[in-house]
Amino acid sequence: MRRLLAVSVLLLVSCGVSCGRERHPTLTATLTTPTDVSLVWEAEPGAAGQVVEYAHSPDEAYTVLEFVPPDRTTFVHPDLIPQTPFYYRVRSLHGPASASVDVTLPPGAEVPSSDGHDWAAPVTGPSGSRPVRSADAGAADFRAEVKHANGILFTWTDRAEGEEGYLLEVRPAGAEDFSVAARLDPDVRSFGLITLPTEKTATYRVRAYYYGATSDVAHQKTGGEV
Image (cartoon, rainbow, N blue to C red; front, side):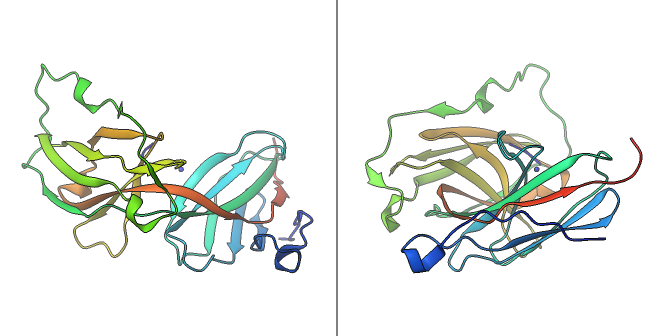
């Protein structure tokens, strides 16, 4: 994956902590213009990040809008299709990260004419044996190999078992936080990234992740003319 007026909220019924279950943070969706929706939620303490998702029906698969840092609690979904229902949820992310590596790419953006980027395809290996919820399940031997002026091959040893997948995270020079550059399947141990112009010098790491609490579902129908 790469670089996603009135309030009317549909709440999922949950008895929360009092019933011994994981608490669902509150999420609200506000129609700030006929085609702009603003989301506000409660962050889950201790999360490594959060993923904001939407669907047009509560019964269909949700689509990722953005991975956001753990301390962020707002998101704006702009310029939407008029007269269309939107359902939203926020899920927390957890899991151990690898050690980080710093990468400085050569100047320019030239790509060798013979490079078909076959090296960039994800490679899957045997599953790790350490439960992803354990502190020692983070990827080992995380390495970066510069392939050309905007291409990096990352490799690592998969030690996690039971992960939802891996997140390749990047922090460009001068940035405060890591962001998600790619979402990968479970058991992946190699992946090539085509970088953005702002990532000529950046720090990278990879995280085996699993989902924590899922927020209540919030619903809005846009206005405007079709």
